[in-house]
Length: 609
Image 1: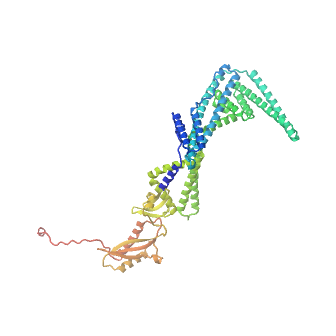
Image 2: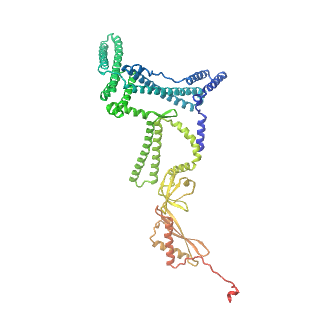
Image 3: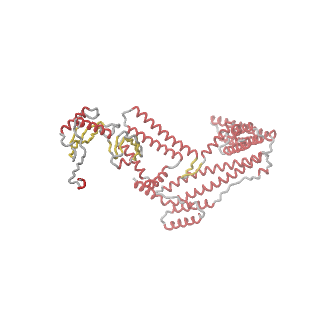
């Protein structure tokens, strides 16, 4: 078995390749790129590689070198613009827009990172499992993988820069909020009124044009195309009015925030949320980020508790979204697959569920066994153990799959580790295999009385995958490794036939009639209360003469008994020996014992005086 695993592992190693990390790591990558370029040109001159492959390798190498030479940078917001705007609503709103744009760009790059992670995971599998026919394209795959890894590094650097700069903008907004200049009764209300009127007018115009278009389509006139153009223009005008309305609402909410009017602020925030839902798909994400910035500013002003309570539905959803982001954010990356806290919790729940279902399955088997008392205990334990381990293994595989880890990569690692484990844990593995063999072979079952050696006899009370528990006749539980039952001779007293023949040896003195001894023992046995087989003609008790020793004539009483788990060999032997002793004593038959006679041929002269 171990050599079979080794062969499979070696076979997998022959048709696989490892990732060339020198292409995207290290400080002297350019020198390595030059080496790769020379290699490509050498292959091109040799003619052993197709022109299409050479062209692809050159292109991929150029992309890698370009990505490696990039210096990550971002477009920054001028932090002095807010101070130069004299803390006006317009300037402050411009800073909020800049912060929202930074967050949008950061989200876009994170999405690009997720896409790149999927691509690198696919390419890594293609490289590690490359087949013979694809070997000529291995360098092209390596270069493409390196390009994606370099792009990942550059994007991660840009995300860090955007996050840092976004925090700078946010700190600036918090700092200048108290200095914000606004007149709620004049400037803000006037702008809000104008934007509201413009929005209503644009909406009415769009609705009127839509009604006209439906009428034209019903009539089948040729006015549909011009009306559609007018509707598109009206939609553009409506979006502009809607944007202006949201901007006015945001500016008014800022003044309410400065004055710490929390109820009015949260009501305005809900209005902004409702209006933003009517924006186009292109504009909606930016205003969602603006809303997020307003909530963060409110948190600084009102505190977390008031922010959560102030607008129950709104802020509860925001808190849940924040919790969701925390749980779904990648903690680390394994095999190009991002692992989040949520995925780990899902996997843990699957594992716990597997053990829970396994326990329920065992309890169900126990209930079924109580309904069928004649069912073999070994069959019950076999069904219970196999079902339990199957449930646990299946749920573990599902748990690993829910994380997103490819089981094939784990199988390769397991194949490599199995070589070392096979040598270090030979005994454990042999016990596990022996346990499976015993469960299916059923030469030893729960309830059987077995004997492994002169010192180890007892009844089997439990059988597990690794070991078997034997309760001796002295009520001592002994855990025996399963391999002992495979490697050694084992006496099973109750395997097929429950009847057993006991040999009870005894001796009488010379001069005793043999037939009288037989008659006495069998008559006393017949009168006794001992349990043994009497009615079977093939298994009647017998007395055999087995030897003539120096001081006794040796006999054996052969008697068949029905073996039960409660019976003990020594106890049975003792009962029959007592019966034989009493029978011989009763009938005056002498039981011999070794005697020594000392004959003195001549005494010393001193003793005669």
